[in-house]
Structures are given as C-alpha cells and as structure tokens.
Picture 1 (cartoon, rainbow, N blue to C red):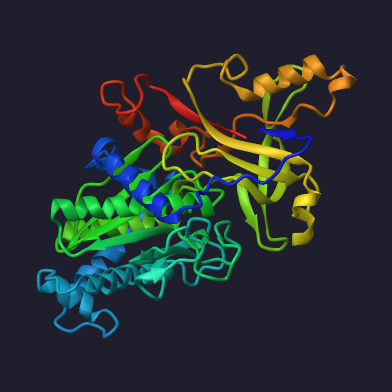
Picture 2 (cartoon, rainbow, N blue to C red):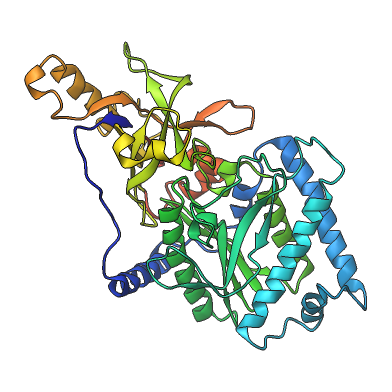
Length: 448
C-alpha cells in the first residue's frame, strides 16, 4: 500500500551487535532445518521450469542436447584443458582431496552448461523462445561479499548474466563491488555427503539467504545449492516454505542431466520463477527502484488489473531480514519520474509504501477481509477527511491493493500469491494433511 506520511525518520532492522546476531541467525537456521525443511521434494524442479509452454519445450530440448554433449565429452579419453579436471574427477569416482577442489569442479560444470545455453542462441537476432540469461559462478571462489553484517565468505557466488543487453533481469547492485545485490544464489560446499555435513551446509545457506533479502528489495523467494562430496541438493526458501530437492549425484548420468535441467530452466524462465518481483525493478539510469502499485477504484474499492501507479525510491526504511514471515519492507518514495539519482533522495520523497505478505484464504473477499490494512486505511480516510483539525496527523492512502503480474501461461494477470508463484506444486506443499505450517489450505498474498 502507498500512503502519504506527515513525517517519518529512518528505521533499521539490523542489529548493532554483529557477533550476537551471527549466533542468533545460526541458531534460528538450525531450528528451521530441524523443524521446517521438506526433504526430497521431487517436484521442486517444476518451480524452476518456465511457465510458458513453448518456452519450456525449448528449454527441455536445449537441456537434453547439453546433457548429451556432456556425456559424449565424458566418454572421450582426452578432453579440453579447460574442463579436463572436472571430467577426470567424475571418471575417478569423484574422489575428494580438499573441499576447495569442489569449487573448481562445480564451476566448470556450470560453465559447460552456460556455454551450451549460449550456443543455443547464436545466430538468432530475435528469439523470443531463446534463453534470457546464463547462470554462472563468479570468477573467484571463497569470496568475501560487500555489505554483509558479518564477514562471511561464500564458497561459490552465483549470478545471472544476461544474454541480451535489454533483458529485464539485468540486475545490478548499487555498488560495483561484489555484493548480495548481484547474487542469484550461493553454492555451499562440504567435503563429504555425511548427514551432519549436509545439515551444516543448509544451515550456512540459510544464513546467506537472509542477506539476499536485505540487499535485493525485489526478492520474493530465493534459491540455494549445496554440494556435499558428489551430491548436489537444490533448495527453495520462501516466506512460508522451505524445500529441498532429492540428492543429485554428479557421478551418475541421471543426476548430471537433472542438474543441467535446473541450470537451463533458470536460463530460460520468467523472472518470477527466479524469485524476483516483476513489479519492482532497478532503473540503472537514475539509480533507483521503480515500484508498481495497484490503484483501487474510489467508488467501490475494486481492483483494476490495468490501473497501476508508479513510484520511485532509493530509501528503504524497513528491510525484510527474516527467512520466514511477512517479509515487510517499507520504502520512502516519490511519484515524480526521476531523471537522476538526486530526484529520489530523502527530502524529495512524499509517500511511504509498505510491501508485505499477508496470510489469506483463497476464497476471502479482499475488501471484506478484516486483516486487510488497506481496507482500514480507506475507512480512516473516509471518516476523517472532513475534519481539518486532524489533517496531517494520520496516514492518507493514495494507492494500494494485492500485487498482480502476468504468469505467462495464458491465464493473463494473476494475483501475486504463493499459490500463483508456486504454481502446480502449491497444492502438494499446503495440502491439509501434509502442511507443516498451516492448518488450512491457505495462501499468502502481497499487499503494497
């Protein structure tokens, strides 16, 4: 929701004691692994797949070709120097010397897939069914990341690299330094596939994901990867779910093909499948965020999918720094289109946007839901707008509603809920008999 504010100061949700916070985050992460993690979730790959049927078919074809190329190369006695260590490692049964050796092997695997994705788009000036990006590791491993409350070192920093310069996922952090704003995901590696190592890798991954939510103001959910010995697991962390794929063995043909499919799907899929909010975009010119907010009809309070208002900001007052929950973010914004960074400074902003997930049953009428904060703000405005003696003493709603976006599956504009975000796997996760966090088959919606 967006509201005028009579005056507001800066708020920070980060603690001042970094060491104490690090212990608290790790303790919470351990509890999450023990209590909320859904292991061996076979359908997780469906969350990575493109929603558009034609795009998925093309991605499946490219993934199959890359998998064949990999197996053919593996069958050769001699391989190219750039990848020979990876193939030699797999031929030898993935014997582990040092943990850091895993970094190079996994990086080489990702590079092989990225090259295959790029080859699939060469020679095509305009290819609407082609890959939009590659998923690649940063050139160095075991790196410190700028902007972290703690001095973490990430084993493998993974980012999206656009194939087309105009691609909408040309994500840039506000700094040229290696920061969480550039991160798509992280690979946390452990030397062995023992249970304790797998759990510790997941715990560390969760700690990193909190940082991603703070740095990426348009992140709805995040992906993660662990590499324990020759076993890979893919994770999805959302505000109300925490899923892990089954074990993917790099020493097995089937496992390699499945990991390739994940990487190719992420290269082809829509931005919301990567975990990004398509209604919040970073504008590199004026160096600010653009936020698209639904506009309610003044007569009946009904939403119109065609009516939205644009706001711009560089000021986040409250960050979403928890793994679960409402992921509330509060922005200080302006409705004037900026031409430079100066136009979105603190003193130029006249409005506040609160963006959060709210639990709601699918059948709930948005305008009758007693938990709907936008409904209450409209009521306050309607009751007090004629009382000049209290003008400026309360927030006045300007725009707001349930966020909507195009899923690209022919269904047109849909509400941004966990049900629409997770697609077909939602019913499996939140079925009443299997849900680990909700007693009802309920969803979470986003209200800005």
